[in-house]
Length: 126
Image 1 (tube, one colour):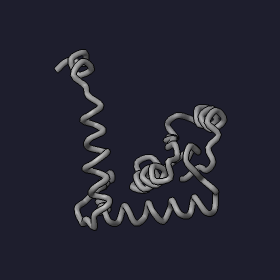
Image 2 (spheres, rainbow, N blue to C red):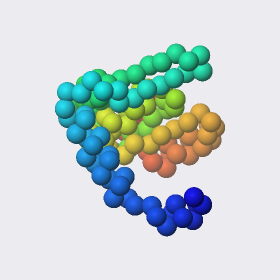
Image 3 (tube, rainbow, N blue to C red):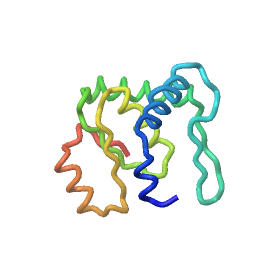
Image 4 (cartoon, rainbow, N blue to C red):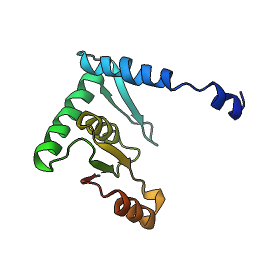
């Protein structure tokens, strides 16, 4: 399928339905299914179940709310690419209603400085 066809046929409803319902429902239930699987360059595996992901994200969001006063609309920047913690940071930000801002070292220091200067994150997680 060509790019133009993909764009023409794209539907946010499918995305909203999956992330808005199925993913959320699996986080809500006590679910031992694998939510996140990371395989590194040595083929070592690391995974989190939906229940583990929810627990870690809830604990982090509570910490961010109490210690850093992060609230809905605040920017939470994350410099943890290719780490399983990045997903925890993302879900925790969503739980707070915060704006998740990914940062990558591949951007270079000038790009990271620009993004943090422009968006003024309340906290940077690494």
